[in-house]
Image (cartoon, rainbow, N blue to C red; front, side):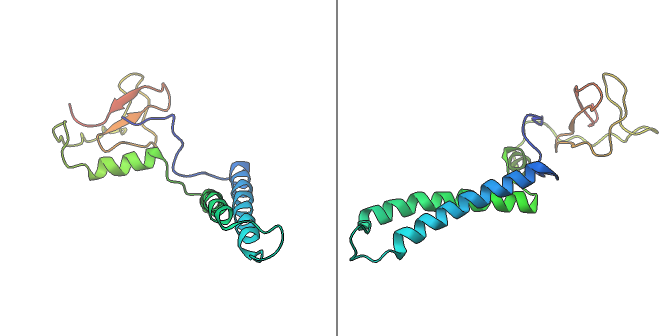
Length: 147
C-alpha cells in the first residue's frame, strides 16, 4: 500500500522550488567559502588556522557543500529522491512476494471505479505494483486486481 504522507517525486512549480534553490545555494556557498578561507590562508602567517582545524573544518564544510548542492540541484531540476520513490523502485525489483500474482481485471465500460463510493479512477492516479490505489473522492484504498 502506498503512503500519502510522503511527498511526490516531483517538486512542481512555484515558491517552494525557489526557496529550495535559495537555501541550497546558500548552504553550498557557505561550505565553499569555509573551505576557501581554510585552505587559501598561508600556513606561516599569524592567525592562520592549524592543520587540525583546516581538516576538521573541511569535513564540516563538505557536508554543507553536499547538502546545499543536492538541495539546489533538486529544486532547480524539480526532481527529488525520497522514501516513496525508493520504496516503489524496491517493490519493482522485489522477487519474492507474499501475494500470488493475479492478472489485472479489465476495467468496465466506464473504467475502474472505487469499491466504496463508485467514483471513477482518475487518469493521473498512482497505482502501486500490487494494484493498490487511493480514491481521490473518498480517500479510501482499493485494489484494481481481480479478486
